Image (cartoon, rainbow, N blue to C red; front, side):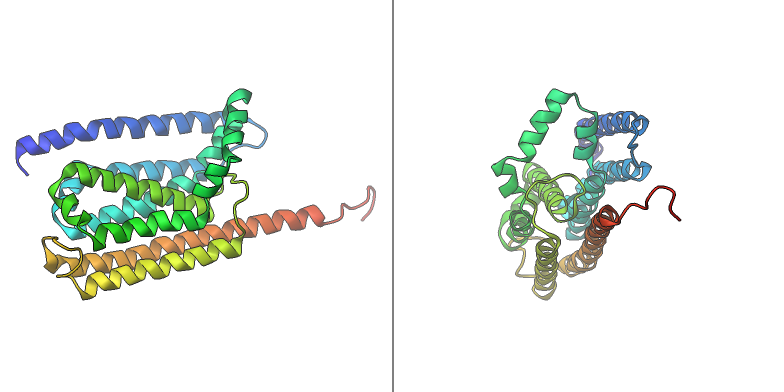
Length: 270
C-alpha cells in the first residue's frame, strides 16, 4: 500500500471512528442514567457494547481493510468480526432496552409501536434473519460478487455493511435480550441456529474442497483453503457463543416464572 493510498484510507476511516465513538458516548450516558434508577443497569452490558465498538473499529481499520481486500484470509477474518462477533457483543448489550428505559415517554411510545409493527415482526423473524445472513454469505462466495468486491472498494464496503446488518439481525432474532413482540419460542430459534451452523459449515467445506472454483473469478486461490478453515472454526465458535446466550436467556426466563409461581410465606410464619 502506497503512502498516499494509506493516507486516503486513514482519512476514510475517521468518519467511521467518529460514528462509533459517538455511539459509545450515547450508550455510556444512557447507561449512567439507568444505573441511578431503582432497576439499575448491568456494567457487563456496557462492557459488551464497548467490546462490540472496539471490534468494529479494529475490523474497519485501514490495515485490516487493505488486507481483506486482497487476501481471502483477511476477508474471512473481517467477515467473522463484522458479521458475527461484533454484532453478538452489541446485541447482548441490549441497546433497545436501555433506550426504552431512558427515552422521553413520547419517544418510548413511538419505539413501542415500531417494535409491535408487522414489518419488524417479519423482518425480525429468525427464518428471515437466517435467509439474509447465510443467504448473503452464499451469494458473496458462490457468485461473481466476491471478484467484484476485490476489484471495487465501494462494493467491498457494501458487502461489509450487509455482513454487519444481517449479522446483527440474526443475533437479535435468535438470542437478543431486547424486547421483541411475537418472537418465536426457544425451540424454533434453536432449530434456526442449528440450520445456520449446518449451512455455514457446508459453505466452508465447499470453499475448502474447491478453492479454484469458488469464489468464481477470485485471485489467491491457494489461500482460499486457509480462509475456509477460518470460516469453519471461527464460525463454529461464534455460533457456540450465540447458543450459550440463547440458553442463558431461557434459563433466566424459566427462573423468573418459577419465582412468580412460588407461594409467598405467610407473615409471622417460619
